[in-house]
Image (cartoon, rainbow, N blue to C red; front, side, top):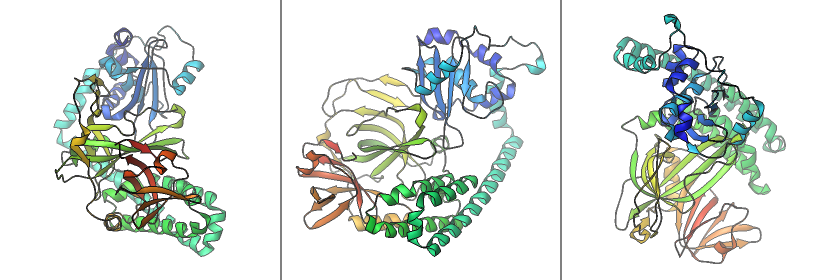
Length: 497
């Protein structure tokens, strides 16, 4: 299937389609596997598609017809085809195995419904004018020449530094406006803020986007939903707590705008590509278990997909590595439901690469394989090439491993966590043993004389009637969101209903 379709979309055709040599050179930079996600192919519609990660939070949605070479990209480029389209075609022409056969997503079907197929009319004739000649070989050589040219390297560094200074100046101005906004809300009264919370947060969030502080803008957008999740009698207290965290984040930027945690919480941290190319990035090769999965709708049309992992140690083994990891991905709502390569309770063995942080948590797999406890079957290896390669059956005995638990109490761990990131909202933690109980309309975690309030609106009945071995929570200063529990049978039960 892929071979047949790839024969109708070759590198020579990509060269002909390119509007100029500069577009090919720009497309070459987008061939990295870490730039693409959710790639697919459909034989019936002869289309290939993918999401290309850009500098913003939203990926560009790119689709191309392998037969008549029609295309569409959501980027604002005035060149046709744009560099994203050329890169998608280039990747398919070079290696069609990267693309998995599946049904067309909704956004691809919408595009197909709006266009009429032609007979290769989009493919231009070869040009003999040397001035307009376009060559993939030249595009590939261009990066090698630049890498050897110290003047171009120095010029690129200066451009990057100038761009960073401009961006930082804009963010600083935006955070100054945010601090004034926080003071105004307190001066006008928390009651007045609660009555007009959505409008006020939406306004300041839009201002922060203009100032390039996109991540903290999203946090302001989500603030009304956060506050409304609290009982009415403690919402004013919750507002003051969140205002305090936002103010501390502004102060942290003013103190050191180059701090990796601060940049990640305000604007944008390093990209996956940059982190994966850093040999000093924190990496851990080992076994992890999926303990929580949930998605949230953002107001900008994005859906965030969060997957929490806990590290598994061989019994008696002591490892210096983070106990938890968070894999956070985004996709546009128009794409629909996006399947994840793992499920709750899965064991994932592979190498995690962590985002730079004083308290590492967010990470991504550079490669991993899914394993099943004592189940003789083929499993699949997934890597950054977006390939699924069958591996030989292996035996896996979960009884040889144990959860990486904290040696410190919950308050001590939380205070240490806040010492690194005082503006953070929640921290993952593992509770050992106990019961989940319901009193009136509220749920609690109980272990001996310890009672912790839970924010969950509902919890499965099977969790309430059994003693549990472990409970995984996101601690929020004075309450917890229960992610999942591990029953005495070893089964993981999700508590996010």
